[in-house]
Length: 212
Image 1 (tube, one colour):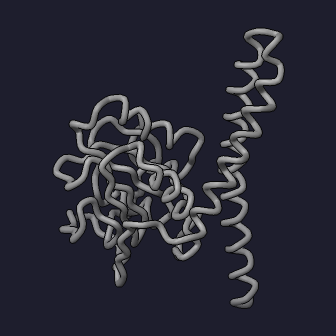
Image 2 (cartoon, rainbow, N blue to C red):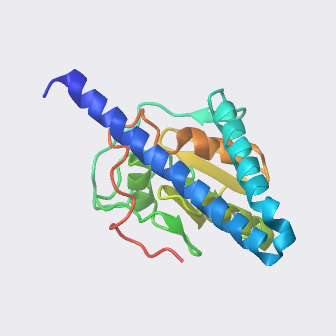
């Protein structure tokens, strides 16, 4: 197989995975809309409005994700070897580097997760949203909602981080003061399944860890 053909197949795979993410988001929105519209017959127009509003929001996120995000820090020269030992990462939380051969299953965790497994998930294209364990429960709920319907999002508490919320992908990180910061969903949209990564699209399931 030629290099050009291999690259085209890889790009097609990434595009298909991203499209699957979008379809999942639309199905979730349609379900919410149908429930809302079914409560009272007079609300029959609610479904169409909610779906339209969600489509407009997705378009807004796509436009913002196409530009630079204020505050995002980039890290280059990250190693990507496999190791069964603990790794002393330079960033907290880590954004890449040597990692455990087993990746962490994506989803929501209520307890801290092993760095080395989570970093492997980042290599597969995941976005890891971490938060200070003292973060108010309503903000934790906001973070968990970002993982709903997403196959490549990790959410977990992380003791000792320097900001209330930190979003990380392989080679990129954004520190936030609140779960309500408008840059957070844009970060997820921009760096989820980042095509820059050599292993993007590899599984974020059937690994280790049991999400809540």
